[in-house]
Image: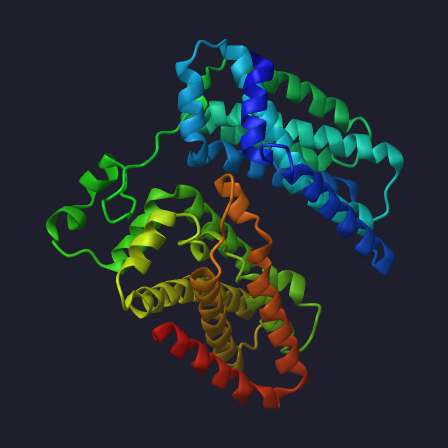
Length: 414
């Protein structure tokens, strides 16, 4: 039973013939070899590697467990006779393999290529990944007791920061993994099942009834606007709000890491990094029904894309304003040129994100985590970094960039 359940979920995530797995492993090898022959080396402490691998693996595993794309398969599986323990461990095992092989593998390849490591540390990294998968699943099981899961997570993060460089730290992770296994041992398969949210006939997803009852504006106003839809979308997806809050925290601490680099050129680098807010840039890709509803009627390109662009622009500007305020507090000397740069980079990244979403939406994804970690998410930040370097080295290019931005806005409007 456990083997059949695992095989069913594996075929969904890796393809009918597991064709996705060889492509992913080949990409990991290419990334490792490309960075290794480049000779680029970075001194990374052991506890930093442990924290990066653990946090990234646990985050992706949590996204995979929270994905509603598995709801139909889980519902069908749970309707059949099954053994709870076998079902839970097969499901967690397959999602863990998906997380480690398709997501963490790329990060591990990059870390091994650019840092100095010992062969024995490979086993430690493997233990970190397994521990992160098991702990994320156990905390997900305990999400009703969020305070307990939060304290447990804070304790492990503290232990990594204080003891992550010790060789015997892997024993602590093994003991904690055993504790997570005991929690999953008593878990029920229904704890991983999430009902699909109801949708309006137009394809726009609605909030849960509790949220609708609390929002009198949704019930009383007859005409819904795109802006209300955008904000309701964020309210209905708490993980999107959490990602936005994380970007604001990054904006607070980023000036501390950039202050050693003198000059105005480092400020656009911060703006480029803060444009990595993936969830708000995949609105059409993650909801094909909404995309179909938007494209169905004529003239909807400008009516949808312009408000969507302004929405992303405001989200980017919020992070940029926090970055500039933190820069002023830590480093001082925020100029009008920096403020103008914040407006330009926030608007440029918003326009590029909407153009990508309209003309090149992401297709064929398995679960929502594939959208969050799709390589396309790096296109806009990389372009922003290139623009930052171009403006810093040749300021006369700024009028040309402004003209290109005007052309892009015209394309959105038409």
